[in-house]
Length: 290
Image (spheres, rainbow, N blue to C red):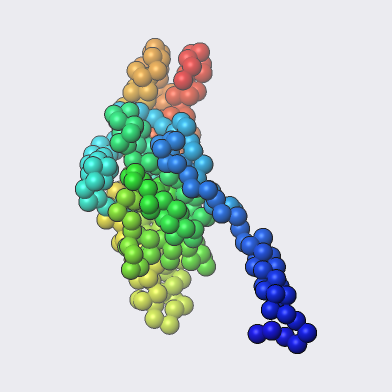
């Protein structure tokens, strides 16, 4: 509508100026990324963009000991997905330092070594950026490449409602998850939230069962639950000796056994991470580069 004293041309110019101002306030659009430039990326926001990772920090799959059962399950699932067959989202949960994230990266590295062009792309999303998942999916859904979305150390606390975005991405919504995308996450918690948070929901909600069910059902959206548990002494020593063989550390194994067990006692746990930390110390003392 043209106001008194204004011409239609002036009114149109005002609308154009308003539109230009709104464009300047809006976040800049990121140019589409070519998923062929790398086999791994990190998703960043503000602005939204995928940052290529030329070399993924990983260990050889053969060095991951004591997790043979879950390794084989995740390997089979990942290869099904890579070949274009049905596969499940996977939640790797359990003890700290037992190789959850290392397994995901090792399997991806193995597929890249076999055939880099046909290997899936690994895209890491930080836990705090989970609410941006719908934007990320819109960003990558048109790609012809298979894509593993990976979130390390996923969990939710207090009033954090980012889990709602994740639930919608895993299975919900009328669009569903893109056929070329699968989601792998690691967590120390089987239900992705602390027990006291679940108990608090039961004690304060008007309908406790429904409130708890909404949050706990998130982990049910993962078709695979792979549990990682503390390792035995034999598995721990097997990790140590495996690293020694791999890096050609020629120390006396009886001495190493005593040192490695003492190392684990000072940290209150036996795990792959503790074994790796001991090996770094041992290699340094023997002038071995890793």
